[in-house]
Length: 484
Ligand code: NAD
Image (spheres, rainbow, N blue to C red):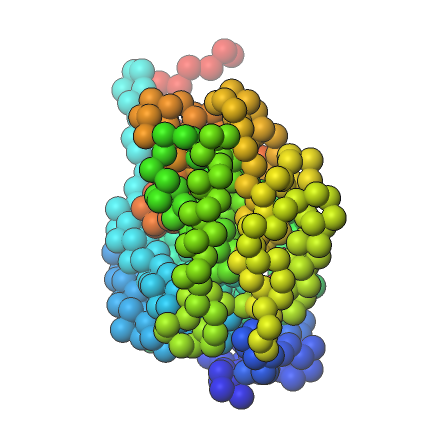
């Protein structure tokens, strides 16, 4: 098996195996070949990971932020140096083209380690002057043991986007990757150790939802950060609430992308491609409801369909390939089911619509026109390469329709009217917005959703607030006046 890790879990600074746990096969989505096999964490492994994370906490939190940051930044450099090998693992794990993983996965993880490593030394509290010479100050403290739970679309990135701010703030982490993509987080943990991370600070355990559920009900856990679907998010949030645990929820979406008639058409088409077909459409923030102003719709669809001729499907390990398979057979079947529904409910296929005639779980990039707001494909998250074109006549109308969804992850607008662009983003009910671009997620910018799409933000300085809390201290400098 060409991607077999040294063992299933990485706990307390070493690889750990316990074959009593249920078997998880890691399948290369381009061929169906099993490239690795790991085992779910047993209760003993879960216990070992939580105990290690708890025990490592005080010493890690007592280090200066600068010392912690130095380790994270060293790990970032190591990840960059090893980018190709990490990208190949990511491609075997997810099926995403190497052309993408070389620039969007380990590199994005390294950015998070570098950014939060850089911030770690400057995390401070504040002082407040109060009447009578009294004053108050705040101490920024870590939360403790944090549990990270990942989705399968960006496994390296998610392992780092959660780990980097958590560790920068002095927390420790137990990370559970998605059972569909168990591989890359193990190497992230190993690199952190090689960069000098004390044992037990960052642990990786494998498993399906049941292992995640065990982790988040443990009394030692202070915080849960999940990237996943809305149904899982609701369960995890409710469970976390029982222990009053902090949460970050990065969930699904059905985001709008609005193209006004005055937009630069080529840029808008590029935005729609990035927002629907990158990672074969398996991106949470995708702008899958593309609202195009009526007079421009035909030209937009023509240009889009023409650009799809540039799709190169094939073995994702071949760097010339720019479009990979669905992550799994299951995901492929879900997406094909939505395409069938789109056709049955009256959508017109302008491109694609079928499983590709090759081994693996490939679906052709698919464009539906004649889509109306009430169709299933315009309402539910598909998480595949399926773009719906809807048309509109004016701004008020399209804003109301764009926001008429329980999700609120992302939204985008293409226009050359500066004032309209800013007015439109003010009106979007979404956490992450784009003007004349789509789907960039640099570490400097907060990322996350509103409404059912989530709680909290990842990346940027804001993430620090989600991985630390402030202790407030009142300092009396004079007499203490009491009523009796
Ligand atoms: P999923 O919800 O099926 O699983 C996510 C993770 O939760 C997995 O690791 C799974 O094992 C775990 N899990 C499942 N049940 C659990 C439980 N009861 N307790 C604890 N953990 C549990 O999602 P998925 O299919 O892996 O990923 C696709 C979804 O993720 C899509 O909805 C997508 O939009 C979303 N996503 C969101 C973001 C974001 O940043 N907002 C990013 C990527 C993916």
